[in-house]
Length: 550
Image 1 (cartoon, rainbow, N blue to C red):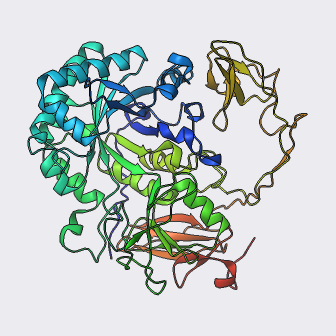
Image 2 (cartoon, one colour):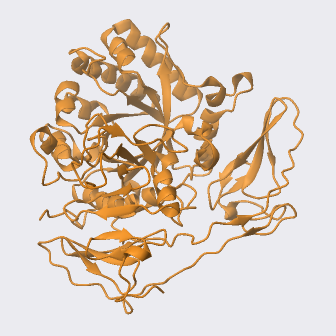
Image 3 (spheres, rainbow, N blue to C red):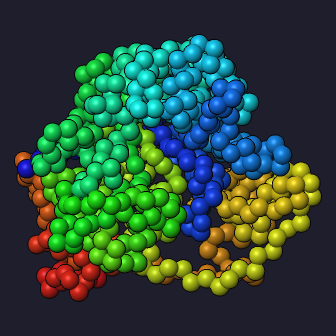
């Protein structure tokens, strides 16, 4: 039985000394319905560093240029996303905002190999950072030395980073780099001691170890290897990759463990084999928001499990869940709140600088599914901060809303903001067009700083707070809250040498014994815990005789 390293070390890491790095995939603003995510929805206090992904490379001038000028910039009546992103610092002055640059492995290889192209690229990237008030740059290169590059990429990448470092240091700006945890990539791509020396933070991609390029199921982000792993699979896990970076000379104080708020999904050959290494030659169906074969955001997975009868499996030999659905034979390995918490604890136990997540927009950012906004990211951070694991109670009934009689304000030429009757909403006037915006849960619009802020900082006497009735909308939300106390459900004593499950008095809960620690788990979406099969199942398939449904 695998022993999970959930070691609660008394590290002398104060909150101000740890980092929580969150990436934004800026293209999420074009996603439909509840998947749409704009800059203004970012909680400025959720992360210590936020990274805007990304600025691309021009194939004609070799400059770093905006990926989508209309969205990124204000010029030509654009949507000003760069300015709104760095403007989050008006609400939280401690927040650091960075711009990720690169994206194309082929172009990064060509730029890094040529001194003149490096100079142009670096100069233009730093100018972008300074002109739009970013606090630094992040280099996005997946991956040096692969089929889109040349063997000299490993050495040339250090030249690029070193020259970036020299210019950024003069400007007082940060330099980070996102890197792989896969041994075969590390060997080809990175001079570990040199990269550690020239960067402020190295963001370790603790995901995409497995994918639909393989014809069998496996979790894409395992903390440790599966007992059935053989050959190269033995190296494809977070623990091995981290140890490889450290043994190669990386400075632990600069290493940040990156986790993913999404799942990798396959289509099973047969529902007779639904475990690890099951035959699955095809990628899973795309989701309604991400629209990508073989990938589902956690927000999509969570909603699908809420609305359909998925089977969720917690393999006691692993730290991450997987789930499958008979309707379309989809199988997904993904992170849930508990696995993110466990990995946050792991990063703490290893003495790392903090944690990173890709990405903000694929978490349950609204909290509509789990009952807490950004539940995965918050759980990850709570694990790293050595806080107890907690599971919010999800909404049991979706809000019943009457259609809103939206009144669009009249806008004149220019770019400016207008207030809305609802405190957490606003309008962005751009060249006569009124574009609606909405703040993250818990925040309200502050016209004085043209950003979302905490209600205590804003005069809300002229608007209606979220949840209150207005003349144009009526919202009724039914939420069931169940409070568990140690007296009503005492924690079991756990064997430190084994990982296993213990039943709970409530049917939708269970205890997971991890290296002597009893962690409370919850089955969401109306499912109940099935102790014999160790999964969450619909009530009709579970056994509820010995537990309470209350």
